[in-house]
Image (cartoon, rainbow, N blue to C red; front, side):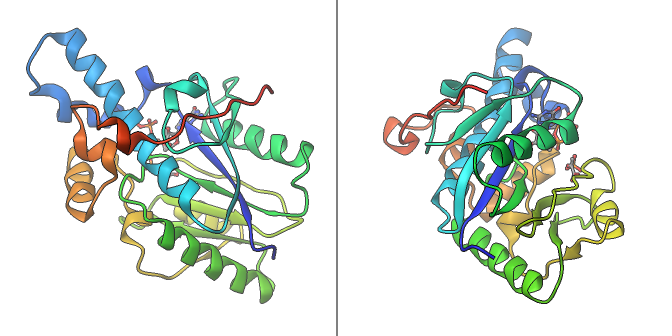
Length: 235
Ligand SMILES: Nc1nc2c(ncn2[C@@H]2O[C@H](COP(=O)(O)OP(=O)(O)OP(=O)(O)O)[C@@H](O)[C@H]2O)c(=O)[nH]1
Ligand SMILES: C=C(OP(=O)(O)O)C(=O)O
């Protein structure tokens, strides 16, 4: 497997994202509009911290964000490419990102999907998980995944070079990916496994050590923590 792995990261429309985190904003001061804005800011903070760590990983090649949001909205830690999410849900968005990579010259690379709700992700964890995947591919596996901390969801799905991504994200996706033939990767990667769906997950990620955006939420982080702006790719 090539040293570099091209990543597809899905970022849902912020005003519809992370509905299970509504209780985390319920007690914030202000009116409903203020709380809705804080909810969108939280979804954005999770994504920004995930992207920041993903971009910093040494094994990350191209980084493609599939979203309806404007590239500049995602801001921190670029550059990455954005591909427009044209609907159809998460797995359709991921296939669109993978198609974009394939059409634009990444045919020989391994591809991976990384969820965008991993605010405590550390670049070295992602590098280590991608190295584990490469080792399994050398043994003949064609895809591999990392289950979330609950063991039911999936935070990373990797396809070996020359093999398609077969995303089966959604409830029970860890079992669905295993049933599709993907091998489960073993490793103590708390940030990589630490997806944030509920207020309890958010507290857990903050205890682990979340990135600057999630740490600062509901306030914005300082400009120095934000980093370079994103680069948008027409698609
Ligand atoms: N581009 C894109 N990303 C999606 C879509 N649905 C989910 N995602 C992303 O997939 C990842 C995991 O999503 P979920 O945990 O199901 O997030 P969610 O749908 O925002 O959360 P809930 O409303 O609480 O179910 C996150 O990075 C989301 O931003 C979609 O339709 N399009
Ligand atoms: C979409 C997924 O995330 P979650 O289960 O956390 O919603 C998944 O793990 O497949």
